[in-house]
Image (cartoon, rainbow, N blue to C red):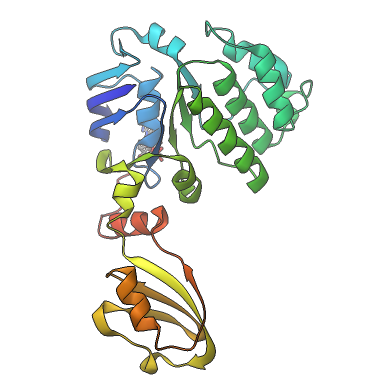
Length: 296
Ligand code: ADP
């Protein structure tokens, strides 16, 4: 649904995108992750035509984005990170204004999304909290009904309950066949939502692939609770087990099969074992640990 090849962008002497290539499959939720300054927002802006790449090929829903920017805008619902909105408008007026350009937009749906997200329709945008403004931005990107949604940090400023509602809304839209490409620093939400993730570093793709595949290379981790306190010297270390913690509470890292770990642990006075492994946060730390800081 989105096909980018070797997208490059520089602002003066600052090179922001150094040849980004990626594919977003139709009907999927695809995450775009990376440290601040990696170039995520710039790339998303290239997708929606707010920023023009210096070179590279970009195709969205079969349309050449560099040749036919207007057509692409109709096919993409965009939720920018900025909340510098039209402050004098009422929430519902802003929604109406933002979606009008899209051929299949649905104002009634937009209003019901505002209700779901607890936004008073008639409140002036300037009087909304930051999180509420973010919700209006998300509502318009959904209610425009464009086949592709591009969202820049959609979970930012949302409370846990709102995140849960928004995650469910995103899943519903994708079940209907829409495609969502989103950047996020919330890696737990990204892991819950996305089937594919692209990691960006200094304007280049560092890793990219289905979430299960990316996580299969991350060492396992268990949270172990013991019935009686033990010190580190008496814990088993064979086969590369590594322990952190003290007393009865320990985390054990391992790089072997779960069967082998449980065999090693069976000699301990176990109260409980909880699987605490394979998350995108760990992968993020591993991927970026040996990379230098992004250039400003
Ligand atoms: P991210 O979204 O990953 O945090 P951005 O795409 O916002 O990264 O920014 C990447 C780099 O591009 C940063 O160093 C930022 O300062 C620079 N940048 C972004 N927009 C502009 C601009 N309009 N002019 C000059 N530099 C910019």
